[in-house]
Image 1 (tube, rainbow, N blue to C red):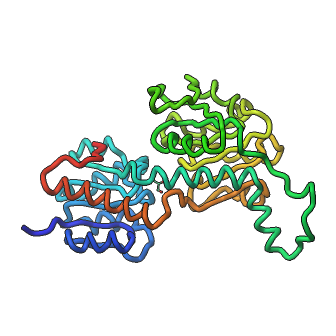
Image 2 (cartoon, rainbow, N blue to C red):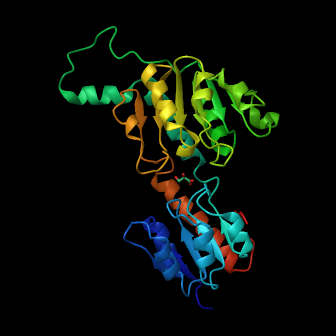
Image 3 (cartoon, protein in one colour):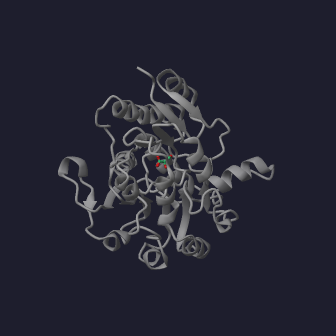
Amino acid sequence: MPKPTLLVTRRLPQAVLERIEKDYQADVNLSDKPLSAGEIQAQAVGKEGILVCPTDKVDETLINSLPDTIKMIATFSVGYEHIDLNAAKTRSLVVSNTPDVLTDCTADIALLLMLTAARRAHEGNAYARSGEWDGWKPTHMLGVEVTGKRLGIFGMGRIGQAVAKRARAFDMTIHYHNRSRLPDNLEQGAIYHDSPQGLLGFCDFLSLHCPATPETVKFLNEEHISMLPDGAIVVNTSRGGVVDDEALIVALKSGKIAAAGLDVFEGEPNLNKGYVDLPNTFLLPHVGSATVETRNAMGFRALDNLDAFFAGQEPKDKLV
Ligand code: DGY
């Protein structure tokens, strides 16, 4: 049996590349720069599948320009807002993502951001390195305590639940909003709010875990920020588009929001410059899933889906 043919749009971890080489006849973009839509279209000629990344905009135009040989698109990500699922469905293309395998890794980063934002890690790190530190002082660099506070989780899916689990170790009280209430065994005592607005007043910390959809675009805007307690701390590991950057920057400057820990940004990698000079932001370059273990697992999961499809089975993580 000939191996299925595959276009891989980005350089993936070595262990994943080795499996691709073993099981597929693949063209891999090893330059580690995203391909343009035209390049994806051209390089898809003669291929049956494409393994894409969240940096590839797989919109209707690209999907409709793909050769008929392409039957499946697997994304190396749990998020799939970069793929037009309707257009894929119309063309009878199968699309899969990589849920589950990055849950813990991303939840770890959310906790890291909560702690770094609350404890002024950006300022402290810079100060310790500056050579200007002149000794311990009772009133120096006072942050906000995490232990025992109320954590609001907007979007209580897999990652939101994993964040809640970790936050319980800090004796936090968990409040959440989700499209539907979780059953008791998953809720584990967390307090459900049936509207996002109902949640906001209870968030000493607010952690965003919703997908990027037309309903969640700029969810954290001026109006919703005003509903948070004064001095709340905001953490975002979901998608940058969920936050209205200008509104958050104003609130960070005024102290309405004490600090923010952000791993994702609207328009990445061109994050709003307003965040950069603020001492009360802790910024990461979208590394929620960036561990060796998780990136390997994401690649393997994407390949499991492709393998299943080319073996005539239903991919486990089929979206359409
Ligand atoms: C995803 O999988 O959607 C992540 O954002 C990539 O880290």
